Amino acid sequence: MADVKQILGDLNKHSFVDLMMKVIGESKYVQNNPPDLIPEEDRIVSHVLDILDPYSTKNGGPLVINHIAYTPNRGNLIVEYPGTDPKKVVSFVGMHMDVVPANPDEWEFDPFSLSIDGDKLRGRGTTDCLGHVALVTELMKTLAETRIKLKSTVIAIFIASEENSSIQGIGVDALDKDGWFDNLKEGPLFWIDTADKQPCIGTGGVIPWKLEVTGKGFHSGLPNKAINALELGMEALKEIQSRFYRDFPPHPKEQEYKFEAPSTMKPTQWFYPGGGNNQIPGECTISGDVRLTPFYNVSDVIKKLQEYVDDLNANIEQLDTRGPVSKYVLPEENIRGSMSISFDEAYSGVACDLDSLGYKVLSKATQEVVGYVEPYSITGSLPLIRDLQDRGYDVQTTGYGIMDTYHADNEYCLLFDMSQGYRVFASIIAQLED
Image (tube, rainbow, N blue to C red):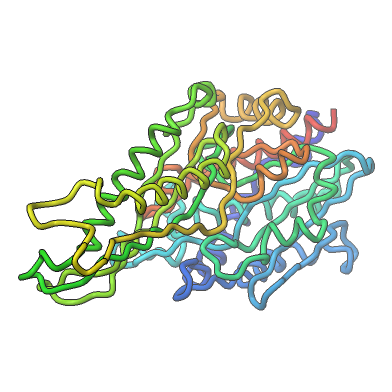
């Protein structure tokens, strides 16, 4: 084990920062917020290939490289360093090549270029997740440069994101469907997309929902002739949330897995057709999500939410109103307020297996390099991993950015933390050799 770690050494900080300069410089073009902002992940792929392609098999090197794109400009990259034992694999997966949007006017520095402040590497994507792209690229480059003889095949998968995308089947789901994940089952799979240098042992499921509310619009001076869709939406949502928290309270296992928050259901967006202040709106749409700890079933929640809405529609008169003429039924016009709920693609959270080989080597490597092990769980969501776990994969999650800057303005990571992440990866590979 010592020989493997010695050969892999420490992170080449100069090379890492140089690559970070390039990928953070592309962050403006990989922002993900359709339809206005469609990421072009191949911009990131090109920089990774500039580093790794000289070591590819086509150029006489050991790396097997596949650039897989299901739609133009939005590719995935699979890099394999072959080992000697076909039944031993370790994989580093989940390094997505898009970023959340950034408004330069709200930042203290340019989000779309890397700036360095002491140990801080600043810019959009440094923590989530272009920093991890650069980090795993450096790991694969070092494996190829040293040509270290390993029993385990080391595989890295850099992914195009399907989150927020109207185009599905371009990232991990499509790769999985096409069999690119099949041989990852032979060993631990480390999903590199969290933060704070510790094992993230639990993640949340997500259920995106949309509540469409219909009332009757009218002049604000005659509120008795209207069904105010905004009021109906607010009262209906309040009741739906109350029932959700009654039926899906904090689960006892959430403490065992150290979840920071229980399951939640809340609005995040509100839309209405517009109009003047003197117009009572007759329709509106409220959108949001459920974040569900992995101890509840996603399909059970969807079923319950639909039942809540059906019951409210049948008993709309019983909802609280707001003021003496506020109402949700106009009997003389035979008009009833109503609502409907719909759901976008949902997926489940995961509770990692704490008795597995993957967790044991990650925990030992973290203790060895960072000096302590404090696993945690969040209701942030990661795609595919629950499905992989259900199919027998040893899935673990970790990351080396800063949680406090995750998706935040003024995002940064620490070069020291990323350097420790590299050493954790080296320790994992070394342990698996034994």
